[in-house]
Each structure stands twice: as structure tokens, then as C-alpha cells.
Image 1 (cartoon, one colour):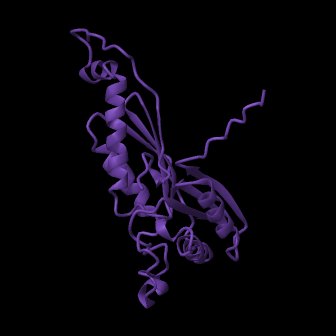
Image 2 (tube, rainbow, N blue to C red; image 1 turned 90 degrees about the vertical axis):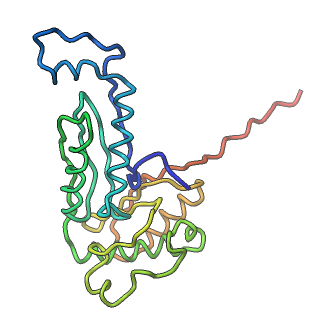
Image 3 (cartoon, helix red, strand yellow; image 1 turned 135 degrees about the vertical axis):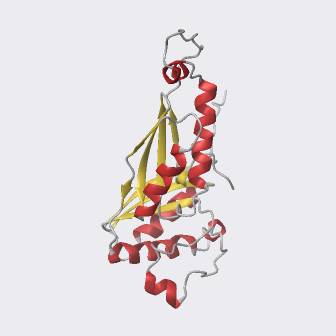
Length: 224
């Protein structure tokens, strides 16, 4: 199952402000960069958005406990979201700056506190969701506890997160959990929220999981 959004965690979503629909001819004495910006088209913004998404998803630092969103306007990319480790904030900005056409990057990604309690909640929530019988098919390890080794447990799951593509991202901030991503149906969404709520130490659960195939309401025809 693939998602067109970055969850981006993910849920990583792109909100695009399209530039002028028609290119303008630059004046002879106009600055080349300023002239190039005036030629921005919806197609060029879309290409840039796809590249931003590709670069962020390719980061080895980006994982199940992170969520990044981006916006593009006038060749400026604004990054927002949450990073469980400081290295991700810097890595995301670095790769986006290298994208052709990007003239500026505004980095508003929030680095989550390095809390031992939040680290435990991340591990417990991950197990509660990805090892549940209904949701285990979303687990890239198919239920195999790959990260349960003495070294990984001692170092904390935040510093050594489970690898692989995860459709549900788990953001933990001071005991509060936010779920982002995409699942197949509403039942899976409900189970994920229920499992996160069952984790000891969790204060609240905020649900931002999207349903890829929402069921359409049936039309009841009136009998004549």
C-alpha cells in the first residue's frame, strides 16, 4: 500500500500555492533570479513538490516517530511538523536546499523533547499498534520484533527506531500522542486510536489518520 502523501508520516502533505499561470517576458535590465521567479508555473511548482517529497522520504533519519509537512510559495519551501531527533530537522533542510529551483527554505520543524518517558511511550504505542492482529499487516517486519535487542532497548527506541515504511506515524510529545498517516479503512483507523489510548502513561490521543478507501453511504430509494 502506498500513499501519495508524505506521513510524511507519512503523513507528509503538500499544500501548494500555484504561481502565475502564464510566463512573463523578463526585461533586459531585470535581475535573472527575479525574472526566473516570474516564470513560475503550476507545472514547475508540482515538479518541485514531487522532488521535495522524494528527498524527505529518502532520508534515513525520517521514520515512524516523525512527521513533516511542506508548503511551496514563490520558490520558498516552508517545512513544518515534528522530529523525534534534532538531526532530522537539519537533514530535511539540507536536502531541500539542494533541489533545483528552491531559493529559500524556512525550517519550522519542531524537535520533540528527548524525554525518557516519551521514549517508553513510543515503544509501547508502536507495539500496541503494529503488533495488533488487525494492524499487523502494516508492520514492515510482519510482527518480527527486530528492534528488541539489549543494545536497542538500552539506547532507546527514539535513537534507534524500527526501519521500513510505516503508514501510521506516532508522534509523542510530553505524554500526548498524535497519530498521522493513511490506513485502508475506517475500522483500522478506529483500532489504531483505541490501541494508542490503551497505552499506560498516555495523556491524550489526537487522530489525524486518513482513510484511503472510505465506504460510500448507500442510497436508500423510496418505494413507490
